[in-house]
Structure formats: structure tokens, C-alpha cells
Length: 346
Image (cartoon, rainbow, N blue to C red; front, side, top):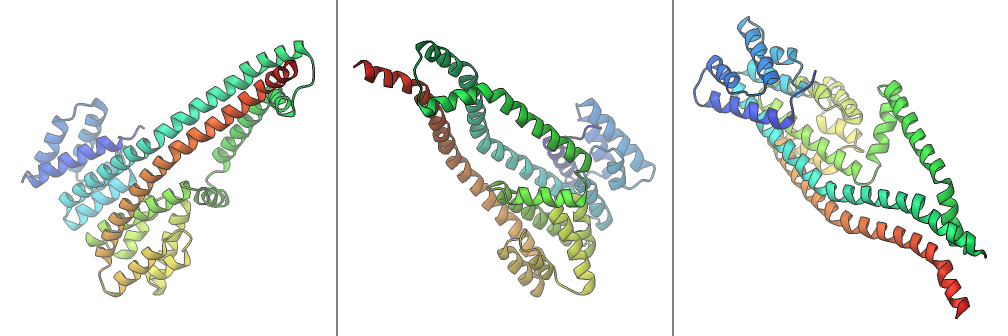
């Protein structure tokens, strides 16, 4: 079943929070939320959730039964219900999805132009190799004579290019099928995560983004009165990227043995920044873990946004230069026999 978009979730949770904070009881607030919804599918789901709650089911369980909300949504709502902080839970979810949507927009804004450049470059290069280069080849074949090595290289690439394309697409399909069949195995997940984390820029983004989510979500759970062990255990269902999910299990085992969170994070220092580990340790020692988690969540998010803007600004001219060099190389290779011929005639 199709889930609800992040933007729609932000609007729903924000509206529900506003209705509750205005003094309305839960029943009236939920009825107003249903009556103001215009999308038929979402309206039906909200009605089903409301009917389940009226029959005595927990709100978090009712949201989970609709299959339209994530584990995070249902977990946070359950915590808010159990701790009597339902209004704060909906405010957190609204704020979380607002930040998530804003971050998505920033990522799209930073990457859209470079992606467009790469797509146009690929189309231009394929067109030149499959159409323009054979035209030059026919002209030079009629003229006779030996062509420069660089021109022969490009012509040979053009003749075999469809084989290269077929090979690339075959490899992509094989990789996709392999991940589809074996993608959930632990060794495959570990290998895939290592490749992703060691990829320039992508690895940095995954680390920063996941650490920011870890801090923000754990702060919510901790500040809501949820036991630390239970809160970290809940994160294994919310943050599913393999190395971090495994580290959460390690942290739970470490807490049961009497270790601190920072001690276990230090043993997983390849995925956690040293600064974060130090500040978490300070927070645990000074009994200010909640404040440290909140501040680090905000600081890491700001740092990530700043780096994304910087990467976008650097990537655009680099890609343009890269494409220009390749196009220039092909054009020079194709026109070089003409230049040589002109020199001979002179």
C-alpha cells in the first residue's frame, strides 16, 4: 500500500498538533482533521484509525495498522501516548518532516544542475560517437591515407561502442538481480555499506545525515522519559542502514554489560565522528545527555547543509570543465587529419 509523502505527513502532524494545543480534546481534534482532509485515500485511512481508537486500540497501533505511516511515526506516537506527551510527539514529527523536506530540497537543489549537466553530456557524447564520428570515418575512408593514432582510437571506440553499452547494461542488470535476490543477507549488506561509506562525498553525506537523525531521535525518546535501552532498541527499526543498525544492537548489549554509550560508539569509530563520541561521553558523565544530543543533532545538520552547498558550488564548474575536455578531445581527434592534410597541401 502506498505510504503518505513526507510533505503530507508534515501538514497532518502540524495540523493535529495545532488542534490539540488549542485546547480541543482528542476526539474533536481528530474529527476536524478528518473533515479538513481533501485526499480520499488519506481521509479513509484517518477514519479507519479513528474507528480503531474508539474501539479501544492504542493510537500508535492504529497508525501502524493503516500501513501508511513509518516505524518512526508509530513509535513516536506510541511514546507520546504512553508518557502523556502526545501533543509534543506530534510537534516533533511535524518538525522532523519539515526538516527532512527542507533537506531534500537542498539536496535536489545542489545536485539537480550537476545531474542535468551529466545527462546532457552523456547524450551529446553518445550522439557524437554513434553519429558524428562514423560520418568523419566515411569521409576519411574515401580520401585514403593513414590517420593519426588518436583518430584511429576514437573511430575504433565508435565501431565497438554498442558492445560497450550492452556490456554496461548487462552488468547493471546482473548487479540489480543479485541485490534483489541476496540483498538482505548480512554479508551483502556489509559489503554494500562499505562501498557506500568509502565513496567520496556520498560516504560523508550518509555519516552526517545518519548521525544527525540518531541524535535527534534519541533526544526525543530520552527527553520523553523512555528508558535509554528501550529508546536505542527502537532506533534499530527506524534507522535501517546496516552499520548503524548493527551499532545500535552493540550499544544495547554494552549497556546491559555496564558500558557507556560512548564506549561502544568508540568501538565503532569508523561510522561515528570523534567529536560526537567525546560530547556524548561528557553528556553521560555530567548527566546532560539530552542537551548534548539535541545540540549535536542541530550542529551536525547545519554542518551537513553547509557542506552540501559547498559541494554543489564546486561540482558544477568541475563537471562543465570535464565535459568540455572530453568533447574537445573528440573534436580534435576528428579534425586532426584535416589539419594534417591542410599542412601537406600548403
